[in-house]
Structure formats: structure tokens, C-alpha cells
Length: 354
Image (tube, rainbow, N blue to C red; front, top):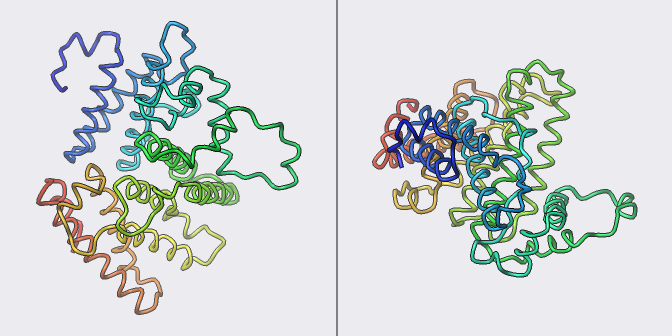
């Protein structure tokens, strides 16, 4: 995978090369080399854009099956790059406005010949209506607007079956892309340097929209992906991304029209929510089997940093909440120590904890 020759680097990319470059970035991230992973993922993104898989394919010579695989490769690299962007605080390679690639259908490859999947693959208008209905399930219109909407299309009708669809990696991937796109908007509108110069009313309106979208997203999750104790690896990863997206930017605490203590509490509660997803007793086997081991240290250390800052500034919480924060910091130290047995970056991260 890593044995690229000079010719392979400078030749016009193909889909296999894009996949190899993306896998290289993922491998580097899982080994704790985040800076190298970010650079490698940037190369993969540029190769993908050069190949044109960031755009909807209209070629009649490309089979539907191959076209769908190209779409999935693009969205895999897209989510990987956004994960690395969150971890490093650096911008992504391409703006969403340059992407017209349709979202992947929530069916596995061995189901592509089924009646619904085959119709979605062969008819773009049906697929478009299906994905529009999937998005509108997160944005229910007011009752006064329902009567003015046109009659549901075939795609909208098929989208009503999404909750009845069997749990699969493809269905999980669709919801993961959805929350990643919300996170991407949060980065662009709130965390980017330009966002810090926006008037507070504009920032506040953006926060309201993002909170509404994240709340609608979590309410639309199928039962199998709902966050609950002893959840599976897929629901755990969705939960981590949701808690991360739901956390306000520290600089917004001073600018918020709400009480600063209230905003600080929201931020601290989100950090505690992330650590609550982890077992109370550190378990290497659990980390490997259920957690997103390739990026768990990132979630762990960001949450621990927030709690340590909270203890340092001593915002006025009651005794029970201070005790909980202290326990959560100790828990993060235990999990980081446990992960350090498996991954060098886990041991390195301990330098940031008391």
C-alpha cells in the first residue's frame, strides 16, 4: 500500500490509487501520526478531484455498480479529511460547493440487485427524491406549508422505508456522512478565523441552525444506532461525533447573550457526555473492539482539556458537579493509560494530564 513509485505519484490518478492514498492516511492516523495523515489525505483528495469523483457521474459508459463505488470512495475520503481537520484545526482541501457527488444509498453491495437499490442506482431522479426525503425527515415543515407541497415522488415514497431497512454498514455510513456535514458547517461558520469576525447576531443564528440540525439528526436515528449503555461500535462512534458537534466554541462564551456560566456548563456537560460513553474501568479489549480506536485519543484529550480548564478557572458549580468533573478527569487519565499500552500516542497524551 505504501510502496508508491515515482511514476505512480506523477501519473494521472486512478480509483485504486485514490483508495491506496486514503488508506495510507487512515493508517497514519491510527498510528498517531496525525500531521502526516493530514498531508496524505490531502494528496488523496486532490487525486480524487483530478479523477472527478467529487462530481456526479453522467457517463453512460460507467456501470451503475461502478458509479456507486466511486461515490463511496469519495465520501470515505471526505469523512476522513473532515475527521483530520477536526483533530488538527486545519482547513479541508475542497469546499462543499465544489461537490455534487450524491450521497451513497443505504444498501450493501450484495443488495444492489434488489428492487429498491437497483431503482435508486439506475434512475437519478428517484435517487434525488429519496435523498431529499431523507434530509427532509430532519427538517419537518410547519403544518401550514404541508398543503402547498407537491405530491410525493417515487423517491420520497421509497425513503419512507429507510427506518425499516436492516441495519448495515451502508446505513450507518449514510448517517455518519450526515453528521459529518453538519460538523463541517460548524467548522466553516464558527471555528474558521473569518467566523470570529462575524457579528454576534449572525453567529448566534448559525448556532441555532446547527443545534436544530443536530437535534433533528439524533431524533431521526434508527433504533439500532440510538445512544444507550453497552451500545455497539457504530452507535458509539456516532455518539462521539454528535457530542463533539454539539459543543460550543470557547470564544462564544463571552459573546453569548446568555449567562456565561450557562454556556460554560453546556461546554463542560458535552465533555462529560463524551467521557460517559467510555467504560468506568479502563479496558483494552473494549477500546479495540468497540471504540473508534483510530481517533479515540483525540476525543479523550479534548474532553479532558476542557475539564482541566474548568477546574483551573473554577466556574461556580456546586460540590457534586465539581466532584463529577474530578472523577471524569481521573477517568480520562485511566483510559489514556490503558490506550498507551496499545498505541504510543496514548502514552504521549499523558503529558497533558496531571
